[in-house]
Image (cartoon, rainbow, N blue to C red):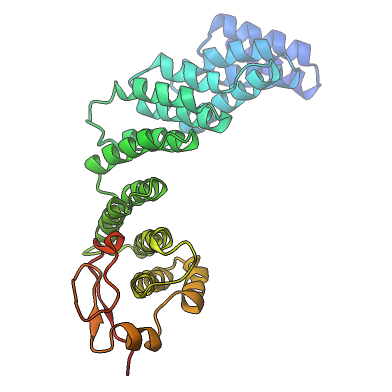
Length: 326
């Protein structure tokens, strides 16, 4: 009788007789291998007895049942612990679960997360492509986006900026999220493609402002746009460190964005703000010497009244700065 056998297992547990408890629970499973109570108890008991191979067999039976979320998570957690004890990769648990139902993107995502935790980024990229083959949503499923994000992050970790950029561009085509635009902009800075980097930073700013203002997104986007300007000026200024008037102007524009970033919660902009104010921005003296009769300047706008000619590397910047001469 199933109930009497479970009672025998319970009494054996109370008397700390593990062998007898296992005997009774095994009898229950031989009668009904779909008894969730007996499977869970036997899983726990085998774990306590360090019989991990037996525990894995029982967990596999347990996972075949329709489990609630809590029981399912426990079973997976116990199986990973057992795999670790017998020297097997814990990610294999997530792999087996996904392979049992390849069309389940949730299982696939958990598997990729496990690979990321282990640092198996090459495998993650390969399996991400395979998992996404089963996605019928053309990438619009939130889980498909998360999988593509893991793929892009893996490329970055492997220093494959080209493929990372391609993946983020794919993500941006599906969902015009400012975060993807920021990541593309960062990659383009590394590649010293400042015009393109600025264009993507502009997309990030546009995507984080408007009807549904996102303060955090605005802060991150303004900070990235400022970083593009800062990097452009650093690359464009004379190697000796001597600043041209136009260098000062670009740093002025960058400072405006760092201030906007700080005002929108991006507090790591504070250091940049202070540094620019103390070292790089234009002064009334700079304006008097280089643009004394000019009310405002714009790197994208030609003005013969400004003494130093505009540097070509700043010609894509179309924002204005007002004179500081009183």
